[in-house]
Image (cartoon, rainbow, N blue to C red; front, top):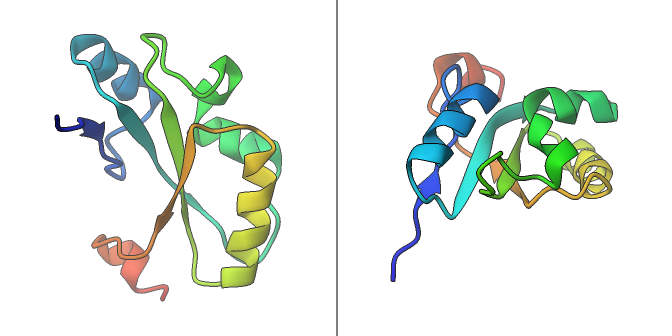
Length: 108
């Protein structure tokens, strides 16, 4: 049986739309828009801003698990931020290795 995933779409799939869409269909997983990681350890509030569902065991109101997407070009900084994020217990961590958005690609 196939799985239905709600993909991250920058500028579109925020927590409000995730809530609406996961109430309308039985998604197996939703993924946040990217959290940009660039040179520093982000505070927990940065992850909560992108994924307020972290306050509800990383689930939408209808119960769909939500993974947090990280984007960055420094592998050490990404690893440190992923470790920080693990402590917040997301349903998963998605690493963005190829966003087609021009404003993302021009930064390496």
